[in-house]
Image (cartoon, rainbow, N blue to C red; front, side, top):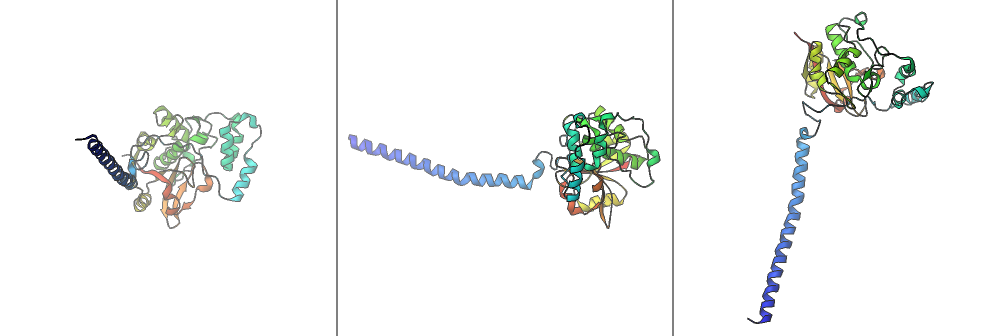
Length: 292
């Protein structure tokens, strides 16, 4: 075989190898997008694999109580007038932000300089009405200045405040105040430093208050049935009407007007809501009864 024949055959094999490589590459380019589409489809069809969504034992959820900005011009005008209480050099940025975002709490912020922690032995029994759930705000001066997590109950304590409303309303025991529940949450590890109140305060901690929790599916007939049976429902809310981060609210009843909400941060949110208005913001929910 002469030199020209050898060179010709070598070039042929090289071209065939290059051609095979190109063919493989083209096939990979066809397959990779298909794999990507399959992964995306699985991600959409099975959202419970995502952290915090659909997980019955999620990591601690924040309740830093940063509510959604008010929508009305009137409320915005009130914010303008009350966002800067006197002696602002004595107030932390978090307190000033609280007054700015919620003018209803401006009095609480203004009184901060001379405030003292609440007495954990306080009894609210005289304030109770049979058959009704009490309404507590987390920034009530009777307990709102107590330390809780990375701040005060006034802006980080919606979880203990909501559970207090449930416990006092169901048992009639007026000693289980927001300050009492917050103290228990800190002591027993349901308050996560820098991350607010863990969901386990409701799924586990509520049992220490004589309650039996029941985790519910996000299905309106089930939620309505629980409320109609007299079982209050606690919801942890994601960003939307109630919060920019995370927040706990209480549903006390359902009737022709809608779902009656008690929001521990903003009294103006305490009214009947239609299911469609807020259900898309719910991250998890529990109903409660008195333990036997």
